[in-house]
Image 1 (cartoon, rainbow, N blue to C red):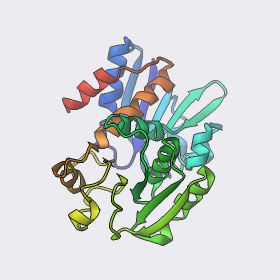
Image 2: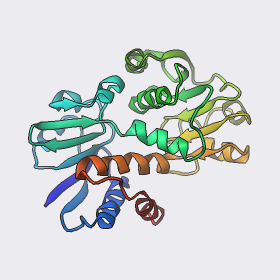
Image 3: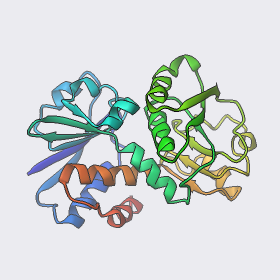
Image 4: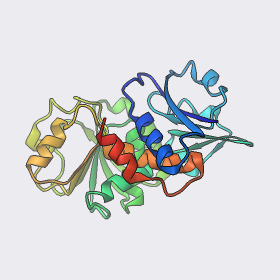
Length: 265
């Protein structure tokens, strides 16, 4: 039996077990693989990693905390500064970041493949992944709006490793006309901002990584303005699909079946 899980704190709300279990069922692996949610913080992480897993998904606050506990890391992990996936192999723990390809796939789903310019809201680990996704889509300059410039050090370091120039601005600055907007803010964090200033009707698209509650204020305003919107469910689906491939060695992941399971929850 192969055991996998998602770790984080809090974790009870996670839909990762729904997605991975649906994938195992579709791949004929339901009798061989199990997937659960385990509440875990940074202090408990070293102990949890020794519990005989085949693979782990990591959410906040563990994406950076896991790095010194890995034996091998994908180059993307080094560039972004965070891993959301651990695969256990005979030669040790391998770290990967599936948030980046997940974002690229989520944006492709709303027709955004070559944005001319972009703005990111937030400066945490997910914002670093967004920088890498935008680099993969061809951008070399990105505006990042933050609540506290003093807490943007990790993001600026990631931008340097990725070769992306960052124009750091206050969160209350209006989003530029024609930009792709990626919000990595927690649920409710953007609600105090002026709707029209934050979501000008010329945006080429919006990716809001929140999936509960949905729609967010941003998503509602963008939809009302006719702007294509991808949400946290889209990101969650595509990053989980890549995790399934990495953990089980079976590709491609059954995205349609995983999406159907997500819609039922």
